[in-house]
Length: 317
Image (cartoon, rainbow, N blue to C red):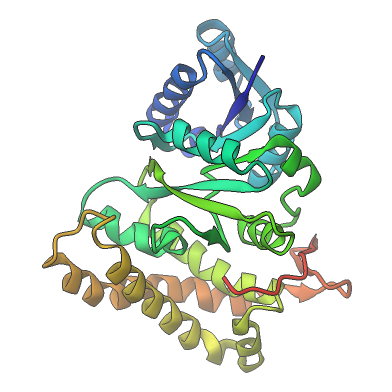
């Protein structure tokens, strides 16, 4: 009997990070040896990669989702999973000791919702700063329902994903909308602080500008967010989005500096650096107002002609 399915996507390979991917894949195989299976949601699709999996990883099941978007690849993997629980671990994330045990224990205890672990970037001062800026919604790191989860480190009963699938759309990641939908349903995604994974630190400029763009795009899509009202000011609202992110960075660092393994004297340094680092996000924020999505007339939003339909979210990010 297969109790759980660990899903790893191959987006990491499209970014040229093969060593990290195989480190994660081997860790997942060890964890699944007795009670589970490993599925690779393969968006990469290179023939040599397929041949390598078939030759060296016969116990790993490959799911062909070439050219499918990130969230849709995970949704397809959930449908194809054979386990009662589906656990997502991205190919650039290294699970820490007992990561899977903690997630599964919480899922068994409360099988009606989802669980999410704590993800951070590689150790070091810079990795800690980027962790706050990209995974700040996980702070404070304590057991609680989440309004957003890191889709690289989470788990669900398979039936929950079939009943309440991740919304489809053109945004890069829709985990916020999914988490809010489950919360409103009374089956929230719960943070499991002990289930830790270390994510490869993202390249600075691409990630920062994408994050900035996503902040504004989310406000355009989700009309329940307080920031949605700022959009009436157009690009003049860009400083508001920027200042809000800096304020959240400050607050989250004061909450979580010990979880980030910062020393006390590094905290004021970090607080002083966030306003400078977030200037890169400001470029993405401004771009979102220039390349603005348009209302599609159905309560959704279109990006480049592709519709994004979102749930009636009534809680803030």
